[in-house]
Length: 422
Image 1: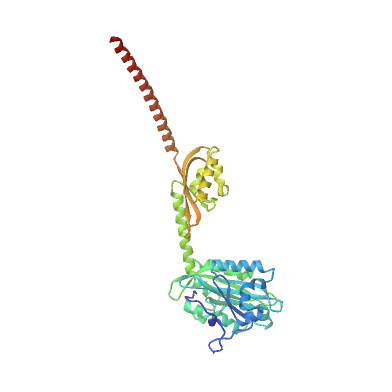
Image 2 (image 1 turned 120 degrees about the vertical axis):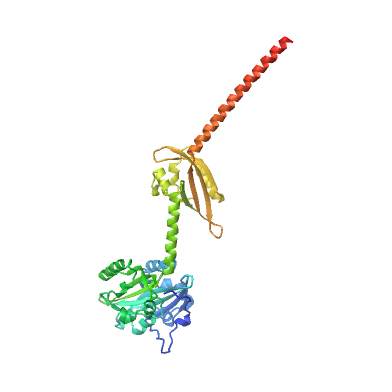
């Protein structure tokens, strides 16, 4: 579920009151800002790393085992870019120089506008958990502290997929108590009917293979409406590698999903419009390299997307014009001004037809050009008509000139005759 406010370090710091459970040494908590910089670390995490908070904020990537750094960096960068939670296992260097296997999970907290404000990050010392002969999720203290802290619906199952636990957020959202919720398939009944079969297939695959579970689906709330969630789960294994249980979360991504669907619809509407217009249409990046054409371009030229990328459009230019067209396009790019030119393009059957081509720069809020949008309008008939008119005009001028000469000659003869009579 999305928080309307962000947690503070004081919110996360362990309390001694009876309604708060103390953090265990196996639970290493931290808070990062929207960029991923650490702004708070629990005493347990600082003790584990042997670093102060300022050093931890800048040096934590160096604590990751060299063999894990690229993988972890990719996971974290994807999470920061997408605003979605992540879970990853890695080896981290402890204060004594020893590398320990840890399980790290990051959970975004967003504001009313669905913008990520900060991240709650739980880091679990897997080795310490195993040494304590836990069930695979750490002590009851560790587990309870985490699942009631994070802004997700949290659940666990046995190795067969039978649900054995849901946190309070699950009850608050669905209206189902723990007694109502446990079982092998109850959760699927709360999904949107269109998502149920796919969810069963994906979950069944993870149960059969032990692979990471991840899916987007719509969950029904206690009010009866559906919201989009990102479901994720990891298997918890014992020292023999056997799956003891599954630990899963459901993250509310409804607002982001609605924005994504709205953007996809706008893109579809744009594509429909671009393919409906009678022009050849295209887009180029800020350097002038073309990266998109409408369908009409490919039908006319008979080319493929791969052939036309970048500066591939030069292949369908008439040899007598390609150099001038390229030069004019480059000048427009350099000046950042609109571009216009008329030249022939080769059709799929080899015939050249004349096109009036125009392009305008698209700028961001700071005035920087981010792309160019252009069209090619077939003006062959107009070009031919213009040439016919020019020829007719030339013929008319010639006829007028010859007729004028004839008249002048006749006038001269008439004057000559009149002069003889005088």
